[in-house]
Image (cartoon, rainbow, N blue to C red; front, top):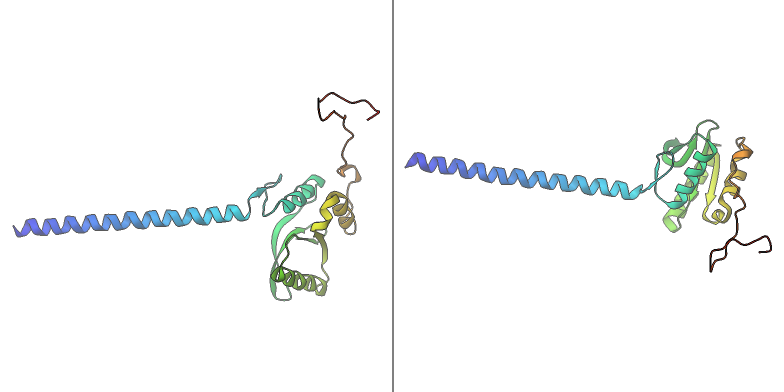
Length: 177
C-alpha cells in the first residue's frame, strides 16, 4: 500500500512538472514570435538591395542610391564627440552621411538639432533630406549628392515620354492631345 502511494506521488509530480515545462516552452515561443514581429514591423519595407527600412520615404531614397550604383550602408552606428548615433545612410566611398528627416514632433526636432550640431562640429559631410523635397525627390537628391561625388548623368531617372490614352475608352490619342 505504501509503495502504491509513493508511486502515485511520483507520477503526480512528473505530471505537474510536465505541465509546467509545456507552459514555459509555450510562453517562451510566444515571446520570441512577438519580438520577431516587432522587428519586422519596425523595418517592414524591403529595398531592391535587400535592406529593410522603416518608411516609404527611406525606401525611395535607398532604392535610388542602389539605382545610381552608389555603395551605401543603412543605419550605420557612428560615434561623434562621444555620442552614439545611427545615421540613416553612410556612403563609404566618399565619406558622406545622409539623414532623412521624415518625422516631426518636439522630441524628434530636438534630436534632429542635436545630430545636426554634432555633424557640424565634427565637420562631417552631411546630406539632409526633408519631406518637402519629395515633390521632385530624384532631382533634389542629385543636387545634394553632386556636392560630394560625381554621379553618372546617364543614370539619372527621367521619365520617358509615353503614349497618351483616353481615360474614358482607352484608345490611343494622337499628337493633338
